[in-house]
Length: 478
Length: 135
Image 1 (cartoon, rainbow over the protein chains, first blue to last red):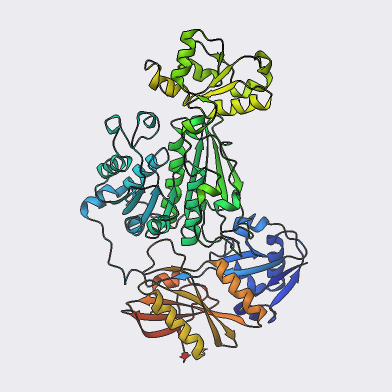
Image 2: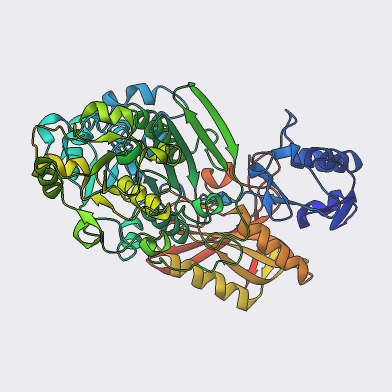
């Protein structure tokens, strides 16, 4: 038997009772038995099509069934079912300076204006909207271009990076002519070229615990287009503290994810990932690669959700994580729930201000300079050893497809993942130097070999990228 | 008819003035048509809040539960209309819930001006004014 709490104004239809005990396996069954017992309640809770009326929310204990399994949400014996109305309203445009569209804008947005779901009212909402876009990289590129085209009136860009050649494979907001230019300027130019009727705020800074609340407070919606854990937790916590939805996306190799966090009643990033992964466990796109088209797909899911939130149409991607697999060309959906114990959005939050996210994610505050690590060897010294004919083994722990891009002919290829099973190819009496692309994976290889009892093993500082800089400029960088 | 005790009324007015020029919202708690407590809630609308408010159902759910624990009921909701009169707008009607009294406070240039209470009908087609006694 579940307990159903009857809201005060409805008690007149339920024999003046403030709660009723009813049997049923799901929310739908319990409500059906409630409305068959008290027929007058039915028209208050359901519309003519037999669906819950738009303003009716149902909670099981403290969870909104929209974020559970809706009316199929299972009911246990001790559960309490509550009926809570949605309350909204307003003076409707009398107090704000009227936003209007010029003749040019009406022509530009005509394909929006002729759809009743958008119409003039919706297009004015888009024009009145203020959206913050964190990052103008892979996800930020399609987001910036389409949000500009859609006519979002004010877009705040946050970035401090400079366009380089490796960006152009996916960051379509920047072109070859922009290499070396600030991403902010390059992105804003493209967006204003697409749509000169919008305003762009340029925040040329990294988002930090010190500036995040101040930057984000002026926007209605925040879109996270970043690619690192400290910033994701920072954006999440700032959005929860400010009460602003965080339209989230992430990409890796051939797979992407998207959802809306920090929406009233819905989960936040910390509900999904209470703790960051150990540093280095999850490779970044720079380490693991990414299909250039992938951020287009994921960024445009984010753009779609942002526009839907502003227009107030459709079913927002709240409490659902979309998983996209480009190779299988398949979309899946995971249900997400707000965690009542969540330290930032739970019922008894312990995080009430922004923290040190570098420290939280275990990232050293000072990026460690290659010179600091003991047992490193400079590429110039490695070259000298090869030239002198020193007896030593150089192993390349990258992947075979990276070896095909460029290699040091003297080196023996043993990918990091194969090292445990191929360790017998190495002799612990030999002097060994390991290298990879930039020195991170070969550092792990050195640690592994030392644990396996190898003593004379060193890491080539800066990897093959440093080799290209210092020894052989004909080696291409990637 | 809805009556609001002075302490609750003062809390509503100061919340409306403090939130100006944005719209405020909150819940009125009491029993038998007498509001004994006003609970200010955050406006969670993600767009411009100068002329619109959205209450988080989670907040309303919490207030409802706390009221029950004290043996009180949720009697209605209140919100402000900054720099315009305390009418029941088309937008108010479209989003209304027929279960509650809706008290609208007009705040002009940051100061409380006047207030009215409405009772939206079942089909969200009209909201007749009801008598409001406060202070």
